Length: 418
Ligand code: GCU
Image (spheres, rainbow, N blue to C red):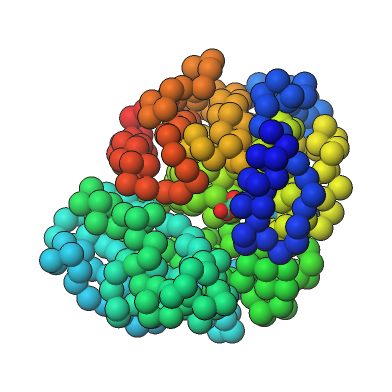
């Protein structure tokens, strides 16, 4: 097992910034006993109703901000946009738009949006992409990112910088045509536009460039918060589009972007639902379970994702004031979909399931049902009501099958009929 684990961690470390000597546990029998914090721990009382919970929520957000993700800035800044590209795509079924969005007149980001034509838009999706907006769809008119991106496969990227060949390379993850056919709009922005994903990335990202405008010291937030906050700013732009004013806004994110999506939705209640895909450690998975990735490897390899001080909980998980079921609870009563993949044990699918199930306690306060199943479901069986969970066979990725399941969830978000 140790050898397999070592191979695994070396494999997972391809985009690492520092090596960790941590040996992950993949044996359920070796998971330590733990007890989870209660919703009311933060206010020192049992939470029995929504008004008590709404008060406790603010305190939980503060403690997440001071212990883990850092500040999610609340100061308003100017957000303006200029349309760079607008054209029909998919034989006229949709319109593709690319905006240059200016944050406080100082930082420019690119937002891409695919909007169904000739039919009212039923809902809109927004997600961060890993490698630039031109990777999500095959169209040569989409501007190519000049930022350091997470992808690095030759010949599409050189030293983490995309070239023209990168166009459409992440199409499978986004399934734009499937989403358009179902009547939904889809928006995407590159995480690198807010902060490039390496420890010094913050120096040229929102944390530094907008420090004075947001009145937040760059060291008081993290890349995860920068990405999450960036999603909120994109929502400001989307909300100005007349055809989308009253549609439900659904966040989705894979892996590190899933972590950022959960944190964004916890802070910004304008997001009506969240789909967190294999978000794992620092996302939906319980931190107290010593299974797969832990706080030690994530904070060693990606020190910029969280506040530096979060590393003190490595090996001391029981002293954490929260666990990730609280993060999921902060999304209640809005619909939540947690999704896992069987071969993605690094993300601890069971820890994701247990966390989603436990979040049901917060949903019950609003008379909404979470997950009633006691055990993890079989692969490809969708469980839960307002909190959905599903695991499929296969690896850490987003694919067409995942989207089939997300497209079962979205109509319920729209109708409210869970
Ligand atoms: C690494 C990291 C995970 C993260 C993943 C990803 O594997 O350890 O925490 O979710 O990258 O973002 O793809």
